[in-house]
Amino acid sequence: MHCQDCPRYDPEAQSCRDEKLNPLRWDQAVDIANIFGLRAICMFNDHRERLVDTRRVVPLSRQARKTPPSS
Image (cartoon, rainbow, N blue to C red; front, side, top):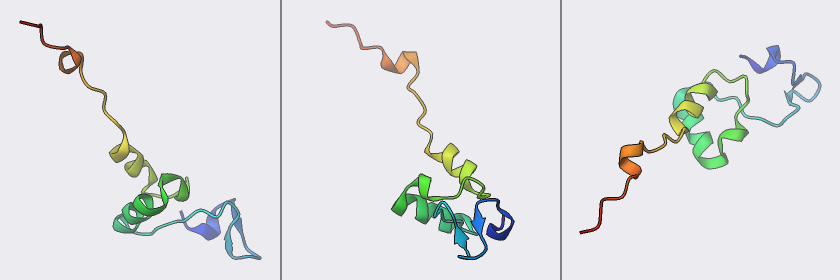
C-alpha cells in the first residue's frame, strides 16, 4: 500500500501518524526489521506478513523435547 492511500497518512505533515516505515523492497524490509524491529514497519506494508512468518519460532516436537533415559 502506498502511504498516500493509507488512512493513517497525514497529508499536511506528509508522513505517517504512527511514525511507521513503509519499505518498498524485501531487502529494505529485512534491514529495517533487523535494525528497528518488526514493529517499526507499517502494518499495511506488503512485506510485513512474510517477515512475521520468517521470524515465527517453531516449537520443538515432543520427540525432540524428551530427555534420553539415564543409564
